Length: 343
Image 1 (tube, rainbow, N blue to C red):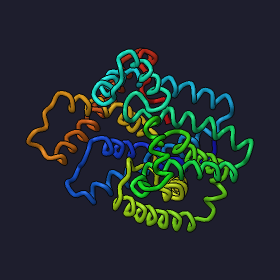
Image 2 (tube, one colour):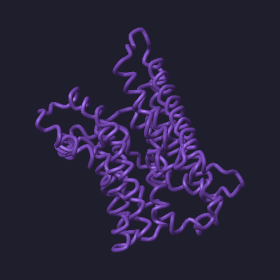
Image 3 (cartoon, one colour):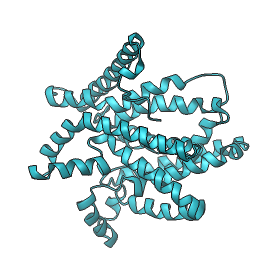
Image 4 (cartoon, rainbow, N blue to C red):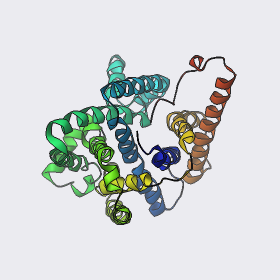
């Protein structure tokens, strides 16, 4: 793989963005509604598209054997963390889902293949579906046709974000029927696939695209402004959830190009494991805090900061302890690979 030094800002982003993932899962860090929306529902929403583009970018450059190995290894990691979070997932079903006990196995199966067994794990079945379907479609139909089809699917999925604007429309009623069964459009079909396609396109064309250094910066600035404008429109009439921004499509494209343009000597690759560990582990201390600690007397922002500090801090401590433990063992194979296999 050429120009690996050009990937250093990608590695840095893979370290930084899990901090934003934690922000999205702690409630609120501020009592100001505008600032809360900007932080959680605009800035944090660039993270998952980046991961989709990043994973697809590296996946697309592998041969068929490498792709199978990537899928196998990451499915193993996903199943391990699904098992770890399964007790929390079952508790969620008990608290929020009116499901008979006999159907709990069905609920767990749906979690594994669709929603994830807990909040943040939904990404894995979505990215697995995305890379497999995109890999097949672009070889059959090419980028233009596949992008057009996936843009239509993304627009349908955006009904979740724009549902407040669709309340009195026939399409809005139709989508409500969909949500009553499938809960969300944030999945591999409607959401992640188009960002995976962007990652594939960049994998094949990034060297050519990087030649025009000014265009990528202009594109990033313009798409950032569009993201803020679209965020304002959504803030004024907020829908069921805030995930689908049309401006995220050009933003993710140009943001990734800008990160690829760095060819300095800095080495950030070693930081990735800390970001990956935070992503996987952070919901355990947060959920234990939610279950066992009373937050009476605290503001929502104070509670949010406590959760964020616990989620990030304890995750980093666990990762450091695992590293120390690995160093004193004769063989690394004795330590479960909980986070290093994922991009």
